[in-house]
Length: 86
Ligand SMILES: [Zn+2]
Image 1 (cartoon, rainbow, N blue to C red):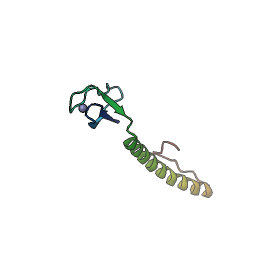
Image 2: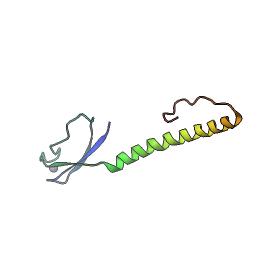
Image 3: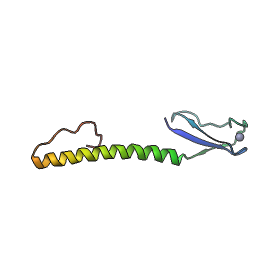
Image 4: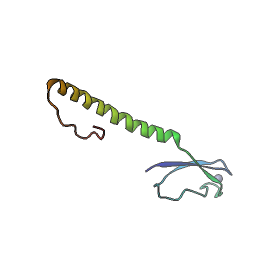
């Protein structure tokens, strides 16, 4: 579930909330009940999560590619299991 960041324009209270894509965006500040809540693009957490996922997925794939390449040299092809990009 993605985490959305919001900031209240009235009291500058920043908060984040976990929501489904289908959920309505938060419109009321939980601190002052003001209705000038603006949605922030959560760059940091999104990049961190995405990067981490990509990195681990990539490195495990790289290992398998290496194994594959070695197997190719030897003339055998082991099946690659579990890697979505292979
Ligand atoms: Zn507020």
